[in-house]
Image (cartoon, protein in one colour):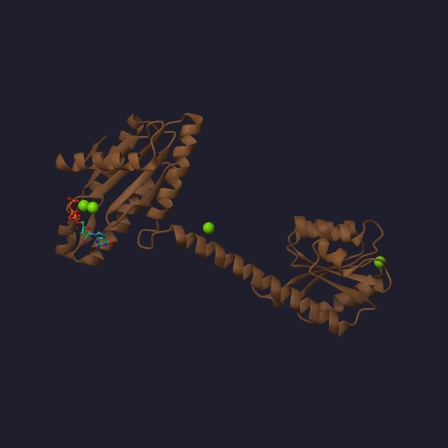
Length: 300
Ligand code: GH3
Ligand code: MG
Ligand code: MG
Ligand code: MG
Ligand code: MG
C-alpha cells in the first residue's frame, strides 16, 4: 500500500445487511473492498489477496472474532478493526491484546467508522514508511557511498563475528587486503573525479569475481578487503591471484587513453587464538611485502 486511499479492506460480518452496507460505505469512500460472512471465507480471501485492513464482527458462526483477529494480525499482517454489539462482554482491551488496531461498538455510526478506518490506514502507511526509512538508514550505515561496497565499520564488525565463528567451529578463515599501486599518480594525471570512477570500477570488478560467500569492503581510500570464511591460505592466494588479474585487466578509458591500474594484494589465514588486530596487522604486512616486491602481485 503506497497510498492509504487505495487500501484494500475486507469486511467480515455474518449479518448480510450489515456486511453489504459496510462494503458500500468502504467502496463509496474510494477504497477497494470485499466481504466475507464467516471466518473461513475471510481466511480464504486473505490467502489470495493483499488486504490492508479487516473490519470484523466478533460473533461469527465458525470462529470467535478475536481469535480471527489474532490469526490475521500474526499471519497476514493486516490491521484489524473489531466491531461488537453493545453490551457484549468483550472489551477494547481484549481486542487490542489480540492485535486489533481499533474497536467500535454497534450499532455502527458510519461517520465514526469512516474516521476510524482512515486513522488506522494512515498509521499503517506511516509505519510502513518508517520501516522503509529504517531499512534505508541501516543500509547507509554499513555502505560506502562511492563504491557501494560495505564500509570499514562493517568490516570490523563482520571480521569480529567471523573470527569468533571460525574459532568456535574450528574452521578456516582468510582475509585479503589490497591497495592500488601508484594511485596518487593516476589522480595527479587524470584528476580526482577519474580517480573516483576508477575506484568504483575496481570495486565492482572485485565484487563480481569473488564467491557469494566472500564479502568485499572498502577499507580506506584506495584500500579494500575481502573476507573469506571456510577458506584456507592456499585457496585465499588463488582468490588473491584472480583479484589481482581482474584489476590489471580492467581498462580505464581516460582522456582518450586506455589506462591500466595494478594492485598489491596481501592474504592471510586466521590463526586460532589471535584477535582481530593481529590478523589485520599480518595481512597489512603481506600487502606491503607485495608492494615492496614491485606491486601487481600477491603475497602471504
Ligand atoms: P603505492 O603504490 O605506494 O600505494 O602509491 P599510492 O600513490 O597509491 O599511495 P599513496 O598512499 O601515496 O596515495 C594514495 C592515493 O590514493 C592518494 C589519494 O589521492 C588517493 N585516494 C585515496 N582515496 C581516494 C578517493 O576516495 N578518491 C580518489 N580519487 N583518490 C583517492
Ligand atoms: Mg455476528
Ligand atoms: Mg537492507
Ligand atoms: Mg594506500
Ligand atoms: Mg596505493
